[in-house]
Image 1 (cartoon, rainbow, N blue to C red):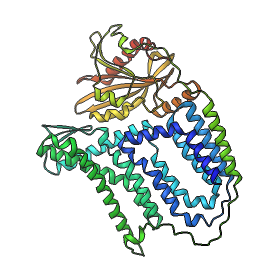
Image 2 (image 1 turned 120 degrees about the vertical axis):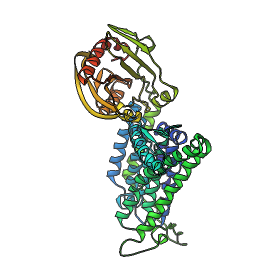
Image 3 (image 1 turned 180 degrees about the vertical axis):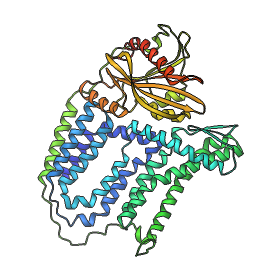
Amino acid sequence: MWMLIVLASALLLAVFYDGLKLMAHEWSGREEYSHGFLLPLVAGFFVWRKKHVLEKMPFTGSWIGLLIVLAGIAMYLAGELSTLYVIVQYSFLVVLGGLMLALMGWRAFKVISVPLLILFFMVPLPNFLYQNLSAELQLISSRIGVSVIRLFDISVFLEGNVIDLGNYKLQVAEACSGLRYLFPLLALGFIAAYMYNGAFWKRAIIFLSTIPITILMNSFRIGAIGVLVDRRGISMAEGFLHDFEGWAIFMACTAVLVIEMWVLAKIGRERRSLSQVFSLQFSPPSVAGKQFQYRPIPKPFLGGVLSLAVVALLSLTLPPRVEASVPRKNFYEFPLSLDTWRGTAGRLDPGELDVLKLDDYILADFVGDNRPPVNFYVAYYASQRKGESAHSPRSCIPGGGWEITSLTQRDVDGVRIAGQPLRVNRVLIQKGDSKQLVYYWFEQRGRIITNEYLVKWYLFWDALTRNRTDGALVRLVARVGSGQNEQEADARLSAFAASVSRPLESYIPR
């Protein structure tokens, strides 16, 4: 039995090595996931706490566990063929859970099922979900933080996620969205709820409350920084003090969680102390002289190990999958003269490039005959396998202080791109008295797509079937001036789309 368990562990590491290596790299490189190193140890500790219960249970095995192992292997193969590592990482947990069920059977598996669920908190979110969540939390935290600043009679203006204090401007960047607190606090809340000896609804409150606690405390931190910057200068938002404030806020979030558990312990018919409902009990030692009995090896577990061995053999013998290289022109060659349009090239600043992680781009303002300018932007990604993908304007626009007042889809008459009629997302945005009209679409391997989630599906499908994940975001912006109507801006963007459609084909391959 122990030989098989050790063999299964070695096979898991061999098969899922690349996915686990990338996951550990995320833990070490991004603070919001740094708690991932501790979670396997915590899960193992909770399983060990149930040792005295498990040693009295027969391990009957379960054929459903073998089916779960096979389903996890299918996920792994899909993830490997598409080299989308998030699928590989989740398939590791599915295979691990299936092996445990195939070994132990349902009765014993229930004892360790919650500790196994803890491991799901160690997998980094897919990048597109992370971007959308981060953008929303930046805006929410900015609004609440500004409300905190105004409580101190400080004049402040909020423009998207930029807090304008007059002498200073503070940008609530991605690092200040609160995700650095939210992910570890979610894991901590789940662990606390598991250890809490109380009604299920109390446990649910403990876990779910970590979300509003994080948002409110992070907003308070932003507000406190704004007050300190107004009173003491910009140094209050930099260096050691900024990092210390982050650590202090996380500890404050933990303290709020403990107080919440104490309050919940006082609610209900049985009012108990915190030590009574939140106790850490260790597994009692085995009784001396106790008769030991060797467990038979369950056939479903043996089948799971053999299935894993076959996959390990295939993964070691098959050559690595290399993404197809597609010829294209670089955007530095893109013409700045298109029919009656004349362009002036611009540049993204280094901070924006660090966030976007694109491979090539063009940013230019084009002016036509007697027409106001059209801003033209294309972000191209040679590979989107490891999470680097186009940021949706729907998430980024509010960060600049613009409010989306209308979002629809529109067919641009007479314009074809990549051999298809052009259909775009039509977004009307406003900031104060200023209005702009935005057209954007995703051009992905010969497809024109307007739905962000459909982009992710085709990314997986094309990686699997075509060994390609390249693609681009195309965005056109026209200002709607005072005295102008939206129809004029629509006509301007449509005319520019017609002029740019044919040259664009050489830069975004089908």
